[in-house]
Length: 302
Image 1 (cartoon, one colour):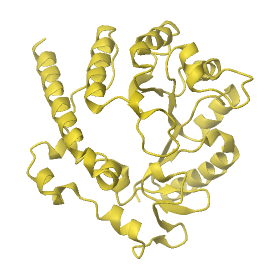
Image 2: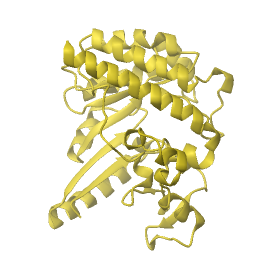
Image 3: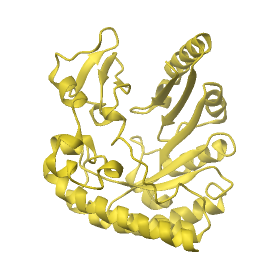
Image 4: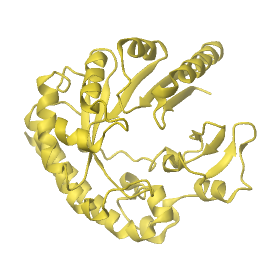
Protein backbone atom coordinates (compact mmCIF):
# COMPACT_ATOMS: atom_id res chain seq x y z
CA UNK A 1 0.00 0.00 0.00
CA UNK A 2 1.37 3.41 -0.98
CA UNK A 3 -1.42 5.55 0.42
CA UNK A 4 -4.74 5.48 2.25
CA UNK A 5 -7.37 8.17 1.90
CA UNK A 6 -10.48 8.34 4.08
CA UNK A 7 -13.61 10.42 3.62
CA UNK A 8 -15.61 10.81 6.82
CA UNK A 9 -19.22 10.70 5.72
CA UNK A 10 -22.65 10.17 7.19
CA UNK A 11 -25.27 10.98 8.32
CA UNK A 12 -23.30 13.60 10.14
CA UNK A 13 -19.77 12.39 11.04
CA UNK A 14 -19.23 15.06 13.72
CA UNK A 15 -21.98 13.44 15.79
CA UNK A 16 -19.48 10.61 16.31
CA UNK A 17 -16.30 12.63 16.67
CA UNK A 18 -15.03 10.16 19.28
CA UNK A 19 -15.16 7.32 16.75
CA UNK A 20 -13.55 9.54 14.11
CA UNK A 21 -10.71 10.31 16.50
CA UNK A 22 -10.17 6.69 17.57
CA UNK A 23 -10.11 5.34 14.02
CA UNK A 24 -8.01 8.22 12.71
CA UNK A 25 -5.30 7.68 15.31
CA UNK A 26 -5.34 3.97 14.45
CA UNK A 27 -4.92 4.71 10.72
CA UNK A 28 -2.15 7.26 11.38
CA UNK A 29 -0.27 4.81 13.61
CA UNK A 30 -0.40 2.09 10.94
CA UNK A 31 0.63 4.55 8.21
CA UNK A 32 3.64 5.68 10.25
CA UNK A 33 4.68 2.11 11.02
CA UNK A 34 4.24 0.83 7.46
CA UNK A 35 5.52 4.06 5.88
CA UNK A 36 2.61 4.94 3.60
CA UNK A 37 0.79 8.24 3.16
CA UNK A 38 -2.45 8.88 5.02
CA UNK A 39 -4.88 11.74 4.43
CA UNK A 40 -8.52 12.42 5.18
CA UNK A 41 -11.35 14.75 4.34
CA UNK A 42 -14.86 15.13 5.69
CA UNK A 43 -18.33 15.83 4.34
CA UNK A 44 -20.22 17.60 7.11
CA UNK A 45 -23.24 19.87 7.48
CA UNK A 46 -20.92 22.25 9.36
CA UNK A 47 -23.23 22.96 12.29
CA UNK A 48 -21.03 21.26 14.91
CA UNK A 49 -17.74 22.93 14.04
CA UNK A 50 -16.28 24.67 17.07
CA UNK A 51 -12.72 25.74 17.87
CA UNK A 52 -11.86 22.53 19.71
CA UNK A 53 -13.22 20.34 16.91
CA UNK A 54 -11.35 22.23 14.19
CA UNK A 55 -8.07 21.84 16.08
CA UNK A 56 -8.76 18.13 16.59
CA UNK A 57 -9.48 17.61 12.89
CA UNK A 58 -6.14 19.18 12.05
CA UNK A 59 -4.41 16.76 14.42
CA UNK A 60 -6.25 13.88 12.74
CA UNK A 61 -4.96 14.95 9.29
CA UNK A 62 -8.37 16.01 7.99
CA UNK A 63 -7.14 18.40 5.33
CA UNK A 64 -10.37 19.37 3.57
CA UNK A 65 -14.05 19.79 4.40
CA UNK A 66 -17.13 19.92 2.24
CA UNK A 67 -20.26 21.54 3.61
CA UNK A 68 -23.49 22.82 2.15
CA UNK A 69 -25.18 26.20 2.28
CA UNK A 70 -28.32 26.39 0.18
CA UNK A 71 -28.56 30.14 -0.32
CA UNK A 72 -28.67 33.41 1.62
CA UNK A 73 -29.66 33.21 5.27
CA UNK A 74 -33.47 33.27 5.15
CA UNK A 75 -33.69 30.93 2.17
CA UNK A 76 -31.14 28.50 3.60
CA UNK A 77 -32.89 28.35 6.98
CA UNK A 78 -36.20 27.47 5.34
CA UNK A 79 -34.54 24.56 3.55
CA UNK A 80 -32.01 23.36 6.15
CA UNK A 81 -33.63 23.68 9.55
CA UNK A 82 -33.10 21.90 12.87
CA UNK A 83 -35.75 19.47 13.99
CA UNK A 84 -36.10 21.33 17.30
CA UNK A 85 -36.56 24.68 15.57
CA UNK A 86 -34.66 26.38 18.40
CA UNK A 87 -31.79 27.71 16.30
CA UNK A 88 -31.15 28.57 12.68
CA UNK A 89 -28.46 26.54 10.94
CA UNK A 90 -27.10 29.30 8.68
CA UNK A 91 -25.47 31.20 11.56
CA UNK A 92 -23.91 28.03 12.96
CA UNK A 93 -22.45 27.03 9.59
CA UNK A 94 -21.08 30.51 8.99
CA UNK A 95 -19.47 30.43 12.43
CA UNK A 96 -17.84 27.11 11.60
CA UNK A 97 -16.49 28.51 8.34
CA UNK A 98 -14.92 31.40 10.21
CA UNK A 99 -13.19 28.97 12.59
CA UNK A 100 -11.79 26.98 9.64
CA UNK A 101 -10.41 30.09 7.93
CA UNK A 102 -6.66 29.78 7.42
CA UNK A 103 -6.64 26.26 8.87
CA UNK A 104 -8.76 23.84 6.84
CA UNK A 105 -9.86 24.66 3.28
CA UNK A 106 -13.55 24.15 2.64
CA UNK A 107 -15.49 23.30 -0.49
CA UNK A 108 -18.79 25.14 -0.16
CA UNK A 109 -21.55 23.42 -2.08
CA UNK A 110 -24.84 25.11 -2.99
CA UNK A 111 -27.45 22.44 -3.68
CA UNK A 112 -29.75 23.99 -6.25
CA UNK A 113 -33.18 23.55 -7.80
CA UNK A 114 -35.67 25.94 -9.35
CA UNK A 115 -36.55 27.47 -5.97
CA UNK A 116 -33.09 28.81 -5.05
CA UNK A 117 -30.82 28.88 -8.11
CA UNK A 118 -31.51 32.55 -8.89
CA UNK A 119 -30.10 33.64 -5.51
CA UNK A 120 -26.70 31.95 -5.44
CA UNK A 121 -24.92 35.25 -6.12
CA UNK A 122 -26.28 36.74 -2.88
CA UNK A 123 -24.59 33.96 -0.94
CA UNK A 124 -21.32 34.34 -2.85
CA UNK A 125 -21.35 38.08 -2.17
CA UNK A 126 -21.85 37.51 1.56
CA UNK A 127 -19.12 34.89 1.80
CA UNK A 128 -16.76 37.14 -0.15
CA UNK A 129 -17.45 40.07 2.17
CA UNK A 130 -16.63 37.78 5.11
CA UNK A 131 -13.36 36.79 3.36
CA UNK A 132 -14.60 33.20 3.32
CA UNK A 133 -14.32 33.13 -0.48
CA UNK A 134 -11.67 34.58 -2.74
CA UNK A 135 -8.13 33.84 -3.82
CA UNK A 136 -6.70 34.12 -0.30
CA UNK A 137 -9.40 32.12 1.50
CA UNK A 138 -8.42 28.64 0.31
CA UNK A 139 -12.13 27.87 -0.06
CA UNK A 140 -14.08 27.08 -3.23
CA UNK A 141 -17.76 27.24 -4.13
CA UNK A 142 -19.73 25.03 -6.50
CA UNK A 143 -23.28 24.17 -7.47
CA UNK A 144 -24.75 20.74 -6.70
CA UNK A 145 -27.76 19.46 -8.62
CA UNK A 146 -30.61 18.23 -6.42
CA UNK A 147 -31.60 14.83 -7.81
CA UNK A 148 -34.16 12.19 -6.88
CA UNK A 149 -31.56 9.56 -6.12
CA UNK A 150 -33.41 8.23 -3.07
CA UNK A 151 -36.96 8.21 -1.70
CA UNK A 152 -35.72 10.54 1.09
CA UNK A 153 -35.79 13.46 -1.36
CA UNK A 154 -39.12 15.06 -0.47
CA UNK A 155 -38.79 17.94 -2.93
CA UNK A 156 -41.44 18.14 -5.62
CA UNK A 157 -39.71 16.67 -8.68
CA UNK A 158 -41.21 19.44 -10.80
CA UNK A 159 -38.93 21.85 -8.91
CA UNK A 160 -35.77 20.00 -9.90
CA UNK A 161 -33.57 21.46 -12.62
CA UNK A 162 -33.02 19.52 -15.81
CA UNK A 163 -29.44 18.79 -16.82
CA UNK A 164 -29.86 21.35 -19.61
CA UNK A 165 -30.86 24.04 -17.11
CA UNK A 166 -28.09 23.00 -14.73
CA UNK A 167 -25.56 23.30 -17.56
CA UNK A 168 -26.66 26.90 -18.10
CA UNK A 169 -26.16 27.75 -14.44
CA UNK A 170 -22.77 26.01 -14.29
CA UNK A 171 -21.63 28.25 -17.12
CA UNK A 172 -23.18 31.22 -15.35
CA UNK A 173 -21.32 30.66 -12.06
CA UNK A 174 -18.02 30.02 -13.85
CA UNK A 175 -18.32 33.36 -15.61
CA UNK A 176 -19.45 35.11 -12.45
CA UNK A 177 -16.56 33.78 -10.36
CA UNK A 178 -14.07 34.59 -13.11
CA UNK A 179 -15.40 38.14 -13.12
CA UNK A 180 -14.70 38.33 -9.39
CA UNK A 181 -11.12 37.22 -10.02
CA UNK A 182 -11.51 33.97 -8.08
CA UNK A 183 -8.89 31.31 -8.71
CA UNK A 184 -10.74 28.00 -8.71
CA UNK A 185 -10.30 24.70 -10.52
CA UNK A 186 -10.11 25.34 -14.25
CA UNK A 187 -13.40 24.97 -16.05
CA UNK A 188 -11.61 23.06 -18.81
CA UNK A 189 -10.25 19.72 -17.69
CA UNK A 190 -9.88 17.12 -20.43
CA UNK A 191 -7.85 14.62 -18.42
CA UNK A 192 -9.14 11.04 -18.89
CA UNK A 193 -10.67 9.73 -15.67
CA UNK A 194 -12.83 7.05 -14.13
CA UNK A 195 -16.47 8.09 -13.58
CA UNK A 196 -16.14 8.06 -9.78
CA UNK A 197 -14.57 6.11 -6.93
CA UNK A 198 -17.53 3.76 -6.92
CA UNK A 199 -16.01 1.61 -9.66
CA UNK A 200 -12.44 1.77 -8.36
CA UNK A 201 -11.26 -1.60 -7.05
CA UNK A 202 -9.65 0.09 -4.04
CA UNK A 203 -12.64 2.22 -3.03
CA UNK A 204 -15.30 1.15 -0.53
CA UNK A 205 -17.97 2.72 1.61
CA UNK A 206 -17.86 1.19 5.10
CA UNK A 207 -21.14 1.06 7.02
CA UNK A 208 -21.33 1.51 10.83
CA UNK A 209 -21.61 -2.28 11.25
CA UNK A 210 -18.67 -3.11 9.00
CA UNK A 211 -20.49 -3.81 5.78
CA UNK A 212 -18.85 -2.86 2.49
CA UNK A 213 -20.65 -1.03 -0.28
CA UNK A 214 -19.51 0.71 -3.43
CA UNK A 215 -21.88 3.63 -4.00
CA UNK A 216 -22.42 6.45 -1.48
CA UNK A 217 -26.09 6.63 -2.45
CA UNK A 218 -26.52 3.29 -0.67
CA UNK A 219 -25.10 4.63 2.61
CA UNK A 220 -28.40 4.73 4.51
CA UNK A 221 -30.27 1.70 3.16
CA UNK A 222 -29.87 -2.09 2.96
CA UNK A 223 -29.06 -2.06 -0.76
CA UNK A 224 -25.69 -2.46 -2.39
CA UNK A 225 -23.77 -4.63 0.11
CA UNK A 226 -20.73 -6.17 -1.61
CA UNK A 227 -18.98 -7.72 1.41
CA UNK A 228 -17.76 -6.86 4.90
CA UNK A 229 -14.58 -5.87 6.71
CA UNK A 230 -13.88 -9.41 7.92
CA UNK A 231 -14.12 -11.26 4.62
CA UNK A 232 -13.62 -8.45 2.10
CA UNK A 233 -15.27 -8.25 -1.30
CA UNK A 234 -17.70 -11.15 -1.81
CA UNK A 235 -18.17 -11.90 -5.50
CA UNK A 236 -20.93 -14.37 -4.62
CA UNK A 237 -23.11 -11.32 -4.04
CA UNK A 238 -24.96 -10.01 -7.08
CA UNK A 239 -24.26 -6.40 -6.05
CA UNK A 240 -20.53 -7.07 -5.93
CA UNK A 241 -20.52 -8.49 -9.45
CA UNK A 242 -22.72 -5.65 -10.70
CA UNK A 243 -20.49 -2.86 -9.41
CA UNK A 244 -17.08 -4.39 -10.06
CA UNK A 245 -18.02 -5.37 -13.61
CA UNK A 246 -19.22 -1.89 -14.56
CA UNK A 247 -17.39 -0.73 -17.68
CA UNK A 248 -18.85 1.98 -19.91
CA UNK A 249 -16.63 0.92 -22.82
CA UNK A 250 -18.72 -2.27 -23.07
CA UNK A 251 -21.68 -0.14 -24.12
CA UNK A 252 -21.64 0.11 -27.93
CA UNK A 253 -22.71 3.76 -27.98
CA UNK A 254 -20.17 4.78 -25.35
CA UNK A 255 -17.38 2.79 -26.99
CA UNK A 256 -17.93 4.63 -30.27
CA UNK A 257 -18.06 8.08 -28.65
CA UNK A 258 -14.99 10.34 -28.85
CA UNK A 259 -15.91 11.92 -25.50
CA UNK A 260 -15.69 8.69 -23.52
CA UNK A 261 -12.21 9.40 -22.04
CA UNK A 262 -13.40 12.64 -20.41
CA UNK A 263 -17.02 11.62 -19.85
CA UNK A 264 -16.29 8.12 -18.47
CA UNK A 265 -19.85 7.07 -19.17
CA UNK A 266 -21.51 9.27 -16.58
CA UNK A 267 -22.67 8.45 -13.06
CA UNK A 268 -22.47 4.64 -12.64
CA UNK A 269 -25.51 4.67 -10.33
CA UNK A 270 -27.61 6.47 -12.92
CA UNK A 271 -26.36 4.31 -15.77
CA UNK A 272 -27.00 1.06 -13.87
CA UNK A 273 -30.34 1.96 -12.27
CA UNK A 274 -31.82 4.69 -14.47
CA UNK A 275 -30.61 3.96 -18.03
CA UNK A 276 -33.38 6.16 -19.43
CA UNK A 277 -31.29 9.14 -18.30
CA UNK A 278 -28.40 8.25 -20.58
CA UNK A 279 -29.54 10.33 -23.57
CA UNK A 280 -29.95 13.43 -21.40
CA UNK A 281 -26.52 12.89 -19.87
CA UNK A 282 -24.90 12.53 -23.31
CA UNK A 283 -26.36 15.88 -24.42
CA UNK A 284 -25.24 17.49 -21.17
CA UNK A 285 -21.70 16.17 -21.48
CA UNK A 286 -21.40 17.22 -25.12
CA UNK A 287 -22.44 20.77 -24.24
CA UNK A 288 -20.09 20.78 -21.25
CA UNK A 289 -17.06 19.79 -23.34
CA UNK A 290 -17.95 22.36 -26.01
CA UNK A 291 -18.25 25.07 -23.36
CA UNK A 292 -14.93 24.06 -21.80
CA UNK A 293 -13.18 24.08 -25.18
CA UNK A 294 -14.42 27.61 -25.82
CA UNK A 295 -13.23 28.71 -22.38
CA UNK A 296 -9.85 27.06 -22.91
CA UNK A 297 -9.43 28.85 -26.22
CA UNK A 298 -10.51 32.18 -24.76
CA UNK A 299 -8.05 31.79 -21.89
CA UNK A 300 -5.16 30.91 -24.21
CA UNK A 301 -5.77 33.89 -26.48
CA UNK A 302 -6.49 36.47 -23.77
